[in-house]
Length: 212
Image (tube, rainbow, N blue to C red; front, top):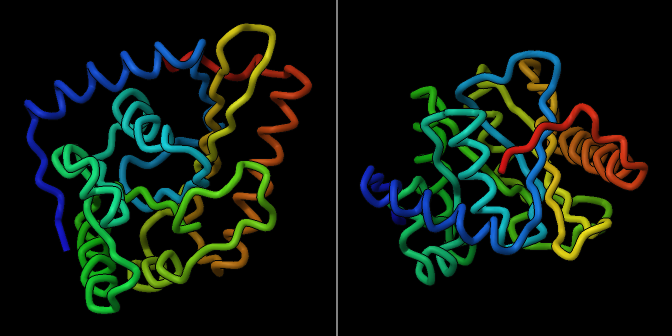
């Protein structure tokens, strides 16, 4: 497997290019934070419906969460976009049991070292409206191996509104310090995502702040 190989100068360039791309494609990016503080480390579970999710994770972490962030990326995706390895990406190849075990062991080490690990537990891009959210077992393995680590839900919702360009809405949910099962986490993210969708549709976005 390929571990993260962070390089500050690559990240500086990635920051400029990725934000330029986001600004070009989206009118605004909004974020809503929970009423309680969000930890600067731990496991962050996210829905995955778009290629843009990875760039938005970097933006969110860079401007709001400020963790020493690492994100699990499919081996094929990391081969296509190797730059992600230098800004926090590490690989997983679900077709190889050995590779998967190595990726989960590496992620566990990062969590125990109080790093931020960002995970798309669906395992692949799925339509934004897909329900139920079905998570792969890896997220459950990580939570069992690092039970003291906080777990925070993060959901992304893409929407066309009153303008030519679409907008992105991100909700960071309440971090959990108590253990939940994988099925319970599926429910948590579904509720967060459906709640976010409802706010966007009804245009109740007073509690959101512009991220970009």
